[in-house]
Structure formats: structure tokens, C-alpha cells
Length: 182
Image (tube, rainbow, N blue to C red; front, top):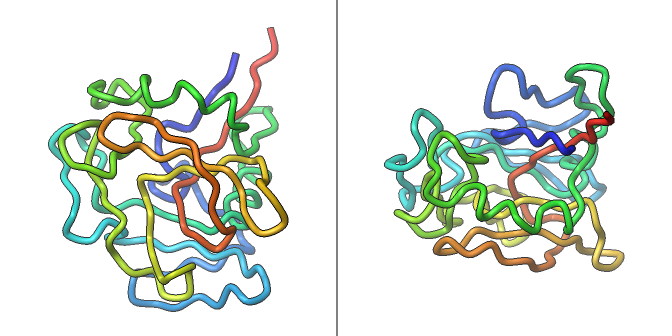
């Protein structure tokens, strides 16, 4: 009873980033000193990417956002008459099996290592202003905070779906969910 956006917010025409979010290209800086809701578009994976298992959805060009922007984006996403939000950790727990080796029929997640999932995308390009200036399109934000400075996420690594927690300023992929009521 859960609907999940199959692609990252900002990566397709119908997955629009709402006003109020600072959208940047890979070579542009975004100051996160005051929770500016920052996202970056372009080749967030650098040269460590592939498209061999991703169909027409590139592992190289994924939109990534800090946690504040991700949370804002999902709360302001409109599709149908549903209320959208970031997913919880328990809702994300089985997403890896719904992506690995499924190509265009899966959730279109990307793996940190090439050749394992829908597409390969490493976290080796620069998002100026992000934590360590690092893009991480293989990670996906959760709605749940770990503490006052970080939140939980999941990371697809060599086909394994690994939970961790990171500073809000890291830039990860954004998937929104909604509950379907019967």
C-alpha cells in the first residue's frame, strides 16, 4: 500500500523540485550554513558510473540534495490527491531487493559499485558546499533523524542495501512515498 517515486526527485519532468530549493549545477556552490535547502544536478557520479543495467535512466546524472531539501521536496510534491513524504527506515528496508538486477522494472536505484544494480553511480564527484563537498547519488535519505545533526539513509553497495546515518549536509538521492488507502 505504499507508492514510491521510481526515479529521483528532479531527474524527470514530472518529478519537479518545488520553489524554495536552491538548485545548482555541479560546478556551482550552495551555502548550507543556514539550511538553505540545496540540491545539485548534473554528473553527480563523476566518471565512476555506468548505464548498462539502467535502461534509459542514467547512473551518471542523478539529482542529489541535502536532508533539509529532501524533506521539503517530498512535503511539497503533488501527484494525485495524495500526501507525499520522505520514507521511513522500515519502509525502505526491502528496497534493495526491488532494484538489484531488475533494470527498468525495479526502483531505479543506483549502486555504489558498477555492474550490480539498475545502474552504477559512485560518490566521487564534487557538490561545492555539501558536507566534504561530496555527492552521493547511491544513498537515499530517510525521514528519520538519528540525532540533531544527522538522519538515517540507505546505501546500495555491491547489491547490498545498507542502513547508516549521516550529517544533514550530505547530498543523497531523494525518493518520495505516499500511502495508498484502500
